[in-house]
Image (cartoon, rainbow, N blue to C red; front, side, top):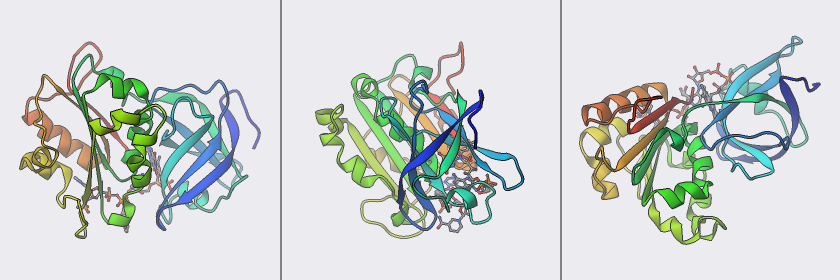
Length: 257
Ligand SMILES: Cc1cc2nc3c(=O)[nH]c(=O)nc-3n(C[C@H](O)[C@H](O)[C@H](O)COP(=O)(O)OP(=O)(O)OC[C@H]3O[C@@H](n4cnc5c(N)ncnc54)[C@H](O)[C@@H]3O)c2cc1C
Ligand SMILES: NC(=O)c1ccc[n+]([C@@H]2O[C@H](COP(=O)([O-])OP(=O)(O)OC[C@H]3O[C@@H](n4cnc5c(N)ncnc54)[C@H](OP(=O)(O)O)[C@@H]3O)[C@@H](O)[C@H]2O)c1
């Protein structure tokens, strides 16, 4: 691949395989590539017919890392991921020079408690947000909920457990409540119902020990599009509304596929 004004060509530096359907990888990063934690970029791979196939991917890594990290599903017949999953260290991936997305904490004007609700690879933008010292400074409590089918899909647990040793997080790590949700098997420490159901029956607030309210709670939701929509509706019923340009609100959402 040849770099153009629209995209750069990067190399895979590192790959971590979590399950047969989930993996993370790091790419080289152009010094001028700037983003806000929570944003996404389009990645491109040759389609075998002389063009590139592009897909949006949320950054996992910190704004200050000298690589770009991503967390990916492998869809068996997927046009993009069936190719991506076969690549190895040293192989090339195109990275669009434009950055997208509004799942960023600057959507909120204030708030004390940041709730991050994810299914599957929707976890990715929240990992970048948790790498941001400003977020830890701003919020008194942070809640990360990760809903997956099987316990083996609870990727990044070791990274989360090690946050007390993160050079920028340290003692702030005690502000985070990480709540796994495993929906298709019993799993130690995990809740077993879907996120919208846990919001409707109060199970999530009870598990975290923190009530949701319009004054203090700010919520970011990312993942399965149906989960995002059902969750948004549940929150709206509680008086929590989408934050839009010129309209203060408590909720920001993004579909992760
Ligand atoms: C804003 C945005 C950010 C995204 N960020 C990520 C990311 O960080 N990591 C990531 O893996 N994907 C992400 N995606 C999805 C990604 O762009 C592709 O859909 C994915 O790489 C699969 O591409 P594909 O061509 O192999 O299959 P596609 O033809 O794109 O998808 C085939 C089917 O697979 C399922 N699917 C696709 N992606 C996912 C997923 N992530 N989780 C569960 N089911 C899925 C859906 O049912 C979809 O219809 C994002 C999508 C959007 C819109
Ligand atoms: N992960 C696997 O083992 C597996 C196996 C075969 C095929 N696939 C395919 O791979 C793709 C992605 O699977 P995935 O497991 O990463 O993503 P997923 O299907 O979005 O599931 C991830 C988590 O989101 C929950 N969820 C799904 N829809 C929801 C909704 N409407 N409201 C609230 N929560 C919801 C799931 O709960 P539920 O468990 O209740 O759905 C699960 O906890 C899918 O297209 C799937 O068909 C995955």
